[in-house]
Length: 313
Image (cartoon, rainbow, N blue to C red):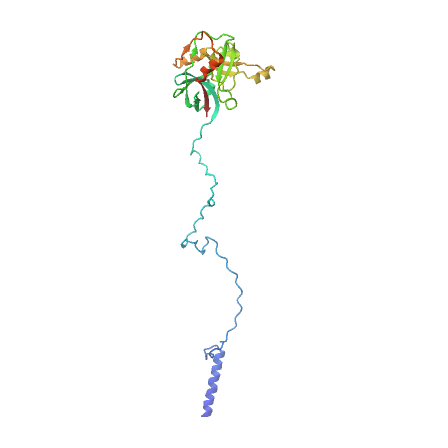
């Protein structure tokens, strides 16, 4: 019987060792003992993952902003001026057609008062102007509009609102004689010479104009660009013509080799009267007789009635 029990114990021990060798559940290890570990292959080191770019899927939401599945991140706000600074960026230009360009001055001339709210000047002073402005003796500027023009005589009639100054009267009676003294008053070379009016004196040199034009006088009183349309007055202070042009001295010098002196022209007062009457306008007339005035006194009469004209386009 003892032999039989010994045989059974040996058989049980053999079976337990076989079970341990096969990895089957066996007897737990003693308390505090380190359990046997199965050797494994070493794991290769992993590189640190980069954080996702802003706005990429999986990126964390911006502070204070709730994340929404599948939504794009909001656009960054435009850069503003630094604290305490001011924006230096220019405003975006207006699209074509969104604004109207302001007219600008392209030329100037002279005019004079011939009636209540009526001015006279040259046709070439007002030609192709989209707007006309008249600066009167007080310094006020009045809008002017063209009522009538005559290209052959080179004359124009303008209208202004309000009082532009005293009315200048035309000389009645016969034409001027050669050698009679005359006075011009106007605004030559505005922006280059005096901002105020300029007075010049001279004589009637010939009773016809360039190429014997019977509508004009030749005068020796100096005139410059800007005098066009100004009054030509006799020594009684009356209108006897409208300053119109000067001889092109440079062209004459090229053709003849000589520079002409003081060769200028004015439309005759009789031609101006005919033009005005054709428009239904009746100008005021006066005779020149008695004691003649000095050029300074004539200038005082002309000053209050002569205007500076601006052509805008």
